[in-house]
Image (tube, rainbow, N blue to C red; front, side, top):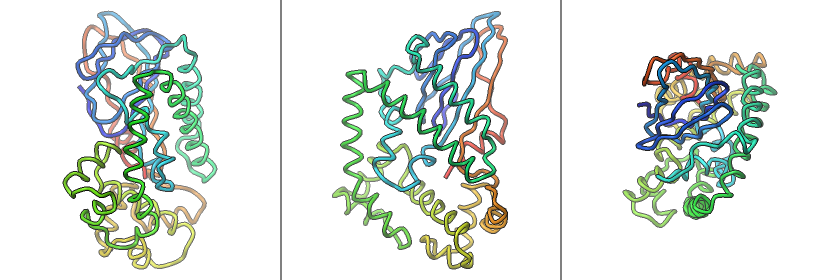
Length: 300
């Protein structure tokens, strides 16, 4: 069984299989789409002698959420964030939605790796189109609509914090301060933030600051030390460590290559792969090569 913090979509472009998500089994046929949120144990179970072709898209929530830190941006992710135990993970081919999303996935694939600003914008636009299709589809489910409404209320409780971060990300921000903004205790904020956004407060804060640093590195000639301070890191070594972990290259290398008009390493952009499996029975799904997995984890 696999379990990861990024979001996953896979389109069955040939054959059939069974998707196991947590303790539920879903028959999946050619043309269907499977939608999987973060931190859910899942695998595919193939029948003996079967052959299945899957096109899989992985992306991190930061790709959508960090752009401006707004609650509105986060609403694109609600179909992934509102996945309760009865969530309908499979979208049937008959709805027509899987085919539309598969086409958008292929458009993303043609843009990867996104080596220009225009390519990066195209990938993000296609991904938002996918998320909008999913949001519209799942709003038709009464239970899911209730979940969406609940998730919106939860996100509104965090709005004061998101607004504060947008204006004060360059200043030290303690968990106690964040909790006070949301009228919560520190311990409850840590739980509530992870439950609502799918990531810890510290992870979100680091990703948000690194996204701001990327903008400065490509639009300003300030020193790395100045940018480090400007985005809220008081230690340049730690800034470099976090930057490399999230982006895949050092701040200096990022600035150098971006200055040549291209985006480097693991800049924001989903990972997409196609798997073809001929099965002799139940088995774990093929995993992405390590470099693909890392790319999907380094979206900022």
